[in-house]
Amino acid sequence: RYIMKEFRQLTVDDAAEYHEVLIAGYAENKNYPISFDAINFSQEESRAWILKYPVFGLYVDGSLVCSISFRMPWIPKATPDVYPHIAHFVTAPEYKGKGYAREVLAEAEDLLRNVYKTPAVTLGTAAEHPWLAKMYEGFGFKEYKRTQLPGKVHTTIFFKKTL
Image (tube, rainbow, N blue to C red; front, side, top):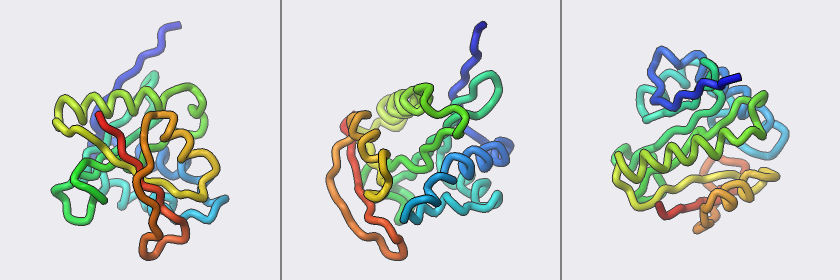
C-alpha cells in the first residue's frame, strides 16, 4: 500500500494535533530527572509556540507523526549561539523506531541550509536522558558544552552540527 507523506510548516490550525504529539512524545521524560519545559506545556503554550517559532511536521497518511522547531537567533534568549537552535524535536510514541525523526531532521537541515542559509545548527538535550545524546551523535551532532541552566534539574548538553 502507498503511504502518503507530507513535510510542512505548521500553523495555528495544527496546534491541537501538535500539542497531542508534543505531550505524548515527551511523556517518557517524566521517568527521568529532566525538566524540559515542553513536558508540561498547556494547549495554549503549544499554540503560542507555533506563533513564535517556525515549527515543521511530518504527516503520514494525514496524521502528524514527528515535529521539529527552530528557535531563531534574532529572538532574544532563544538560542545559545549565533545559529538556529532545534527545539521540540519529537515523535509520537506509536511512530517511534520507524526512521521518521531521521527523515524530519534531513528535511529540517535542507531548510536550514537552503532557505535560512545557515552554516550550522545547535540543539540541547539532557545528559540524564538514557539515549538522546547518542541519537544526536548518530545524526552527526558534536557536543560542545555542558551546563546547568537556571531552574533545570538536568545538565544540558549542547550540540552543534555543521551543515
